Image (cartoon, rainbow, N blue to C red; front, side, top):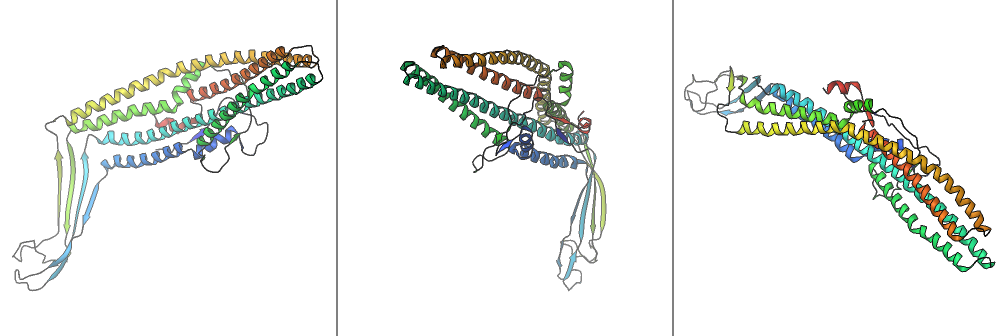
Length: 442
């Protein structure tokens, strides 16, 4: 069986680094570290080694069994005219070989399939953990960006508070304007704190996905970059066909069906006879060694070889084989239904994500235009407010509108990146398998 190898092939939007940070990590670094240190992936690798051992156990049914014993001791007493104590030692060996067993073909296939199952389980775990790390990375970028937007607006509102205080002290406005400006600025404090907590939580998830120990005195990873919007054009039919071929969970489901079928055939082998060839032999290097209880000098033990065959066949089935077969057959049928459901869901999921991407793209364009207009309006009202040509209420409305459009635009870009990550997961693009893997999974 050929060795398997895979390569990460991330498709979709990546994050472009815009500023250096002490603990800054790019998306590529996050995924590579997750692949190397994530505990779930490490456990799946250990399970792969365990499956290799189980494969040897299943293949042992075809291998011969050779056993050897070397008894030794002392023999003495007045028997047959002997008057001395003699030491003795001899070798006994047995050799058995399965000649016919209906379970052999299924056992050999089951060992190979078991190893492939462990490999695909590792692949499924890798996909799940890489996807979780990618979502955590995007979540950290989103919450940091949301915090930055709100802090920028609070700074503008604080500047407005200072401006209104100056105008109040100069007698150009009343105290209610100062109070209103102060209340508006302080309303953002709780929102900024909520975004800060969410940012810390996503960084913690990112550290866990990367295999770091959050309890240790180490800094949490800080994502390097910002969310980018890059529209993607996809073709559903080719992507659906490719996903059915390359998705690790679908390959695993098909392998589980094969494994259940082979397990059923192994159990059904109990209906058929089994034939085992045997060869036993005894080698005695000296003469004059008597059998136990013998008093005759002519009843010595001599070297010998005996060949034969053992034939077994279950005549009456008390339900042990029949019941096990029925139970295993139901398991196989359940696996087949599960596999068909997974395969049928691929097209629906890709269509849903495709429609979601189109809807988010339309929303992003609308919010981008609205954000530009809100910035111009907020700047104009701010200038008029300084000159006394606009009210504090108008300023409040324009600032709230600016915050909502900027936050909505950031959320649309974040949701688009999440949808791209989900597209890569459903289409099986997190990593692509080499040809030799596909050739071993029929």
